[in-house]
Image 1 (cartoon, rainbow, N blue to C red):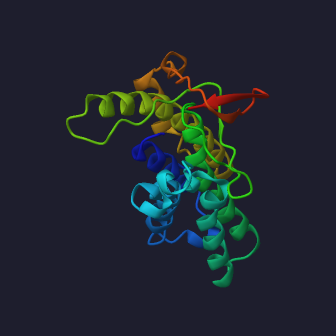
Image 2: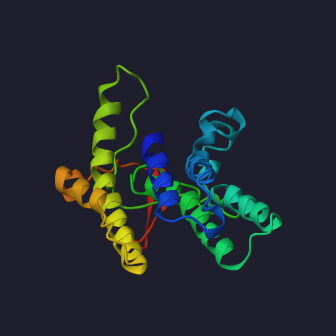
Image 3: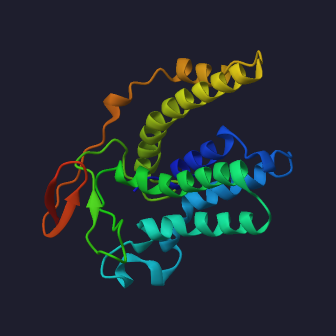
Length: 224
């Protein structure tokens, strides 16, 4: 699983790409971005709620299903609809909410180790990718070396990608507005980091026992 820092960072990035027209007031921007960060973190709610933990659900992390990941985005969208948001504003808000919710599952799948019950409760079959690009999050502790080590690798992969995305969005926005504000932050971030993400591929744990579906491979593996 990815770290809460990585999940929050990606959720916040989705929120700062652009603001729905109805949320342009400065007072709403941090609230909107903060809510997207929370949505990106919600699947890890099972750490705090015993009844949602894998041990209470036949070994399945049910909060890491499409149903749970999209539950709060859908509820938020219904709330915005009730408040009078319509058409383009509603569509743009819905897109950001959906991306924030799915970003958690996407990052955890990119770890390539722990299978996720994406189709729960329709199916209990877990899924995982046959490769890993992100490290598993270390136990949160000030004295845990692997927490900092794995977090560094995770950010080394994410920050260049976010920088590229920020650069592209800022360039398009500047072109549309005729602004002279280039994506300086994105370019600087890429230049300073200069990281090669292909060298940070995390090893994938090998397991055997319970059948799991390897996404994109067309084959089935086993987990013990």
